[in-house]
Image (tube, rainbow over all chains, first blue to last red; front, top):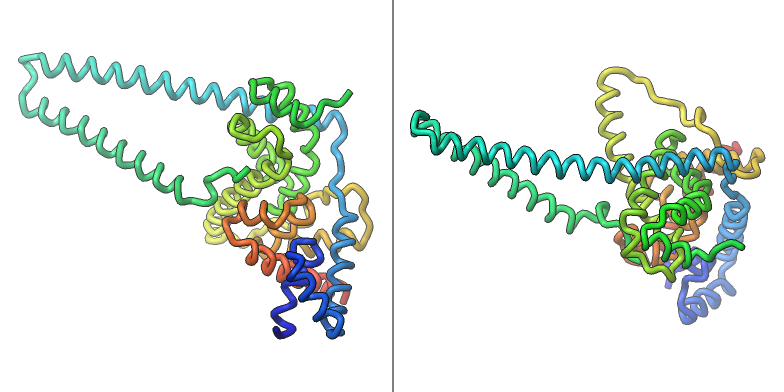
Length: 149
Length: 181
């Protein structure tokens, strides 16, 4: 193997992520290669510096405010779900009643009835199609999945 | 006595919001810091870290209570940050059409516990990295994710994680050398 092929392995070696066989292979190369030893020393130095950098712990008052804000979002999330479900039920029920009345009413022109029925079917097809597309995208979009535990 | 994380997670899974509050307070600092490095904006970081906690709460029932919470949360946070970057990228493109205003990255606070000149330089150098390099540096060094966890979060093989992290560290070294000139 050439030096270039060993270089990415230095990172894995430093992080303890190489298999014992790969580590032994790299160690044998390091024993003979001054440039790779130097690079490993530099990377070790950088890793140590980064390890010293810790994020500051917010004071209690700020943490409380932060949690309140998260809590409000949790609560509002439920509120939005209930509001949306309620609105969909009310709208669908109202639309169904309206259309049923109109279709039964002999005074309404047949052409208008056909138009309204076509409108409803068109809306349902579009909705189902969009829903299916969203679900299909969700399955393949790596950014939408939360995580592998 | 401080409750173990596994106990807290189990309480969360039963709908106990107070237990979730304990977890949120425990990781809020780390979450904001990591998001700040990823997004280069304190306000966006605050919003993203909170949004990620909300998503974690929504999916907490599917989480294995015996596993550590933070690596799981870190992956959710990364996904929220990526979505935010995509949206702000689109917004910035629209804004650039109108003006050339670009907010200074130095206007945001550096969320480090102990600061000195060298650490501030490293902070700046990380923020100068490409998003792809920045995220592996943040995940590996500031969030403690293993290569396996990073591979799962990024949807790439472990070998690619290793080479990407190597390139990111090289870029960071180069960036720091450039700053010191």
